[in-house]
Length: 633
Image 1 (cartoon, rainbow, N blue to C red):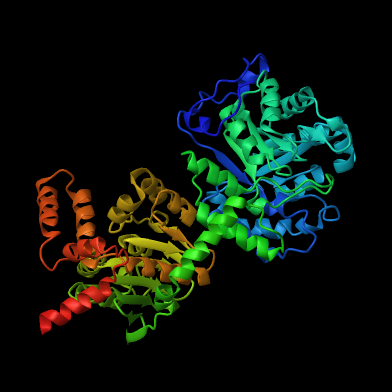
Image 2 (cartoon, rainbow, N blue to C red):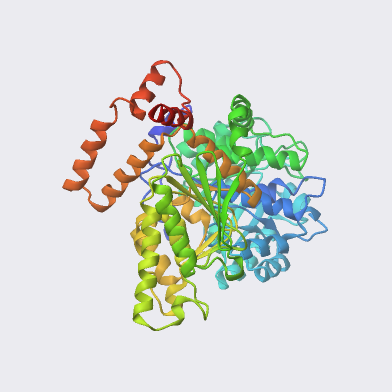
């Protein structure tokens, strides 16, 4: 047997099974050639498998927030709950409420939410809750099967087959999971042939994938290789997923070995939460943070923000009074807190910004704190719709701010349920008339607004805690940066009203990309923050409205070290790269910026001087206030 080596994970671009696939039936399960790029799918099982064995009651709102936080970290598959009878698993008695929240929030449009279903009664409850994926299970050992489900392995598989058949008939995907793949607390070591037999049954009944559960956490890389060599004689790697517990500290090593041998899917639990009530002494699942950290360090993309995930693991551990069992997560949180301590003074200056109201016309309020101006839409009675007066007022404000060199950043946010509902469609709005002249005037005003936001020399930040429709979506994406809460939604409903998103289309295509923007505009569907985060169009998803305020403050803190004139030049470089790629206009401007970077008195000259002094945290507000004082002296 070849010894496993974590370094091999980088070189393992595709997998060749240890033995050829001999089974004829398995051909129908093959999904095509192996992926050429390193990539893994991680199923987060914390909300179900991680919480079910905790003795203290976990409130429903905590479970919902956990799911929101996990989604915000970039996870695209989260095992939400279980439809086991509440008398057996009272911790998950609120499965209906949890699923209802997922549906109401729209998270299920971009994230998979499998649910555990033990029998037909549980399946009916899951179907009524509109679950889209059912997880069935069986043990590879008779002793554990009787202790866990009070039936034999064959009886457990028959129940599972009944659930899978019903699921597939209703368009619900099904996944199988095998317990005790290496050892049973009652029967001892498990024969790999028994695991193969159960896995084969799951695939034959229609499961798209089979999870391999080391329920006791006793397995090692040696055991993984031994088992997979047997399974690969009949089952391709792409139909298997690793589900390893970490009782003996071997789970990450088992994930590495499985990946080296071809598995690209793994189950894990945030903070290593979990355990099994019928396997005494077995600790939790492998921590998601540890798996993500290992893969990302090896150059294997997971699509997950390890820092957000680590914060979530620390948060849920405190909520349920459990030790954080993720070593990587605990270390990252500790390092982050150390860094926060070193910048406490600077951070407090931003988080405690004293906003001074400059003006308030009942439609939008203007506030200022230092070098930052905030524009808040306050026309809540009509969803912050873009009235004539609001459009004119904000456009004039942006034009005025463009000339104010003391303003570095502009924040755009809103009060109420809606961020902005776009054009004013009310009976008194400009769209209520068919007069071409009035329509032309309104178009020119709206176009001027978007142009003013787009061409603002300041860095513009949209802070969105609410719903956006039509032109409101355009306002958000005309800005440079988007920070959003979980309740933010973006819908271009024009097509449903017989209209077209003409004015905002250029911003959507630029920020969302052609294919994504076209589908969203043609369908008029609701687009979630998670979808936009995945394509880079949203730059931060907070866990709550309060967290969004903190996130915006922290983002402004980071911008303290961003030179404002340099930022303005960067915005223009990007604009010309979009409008005139490879053209004369772009070429001339690139040369102009390059030649002006180090002229006397410039930001570049000052920045390089500070760099030589080893000062990496330049306060550009202070620099420009001094420059202004010198010029006026």
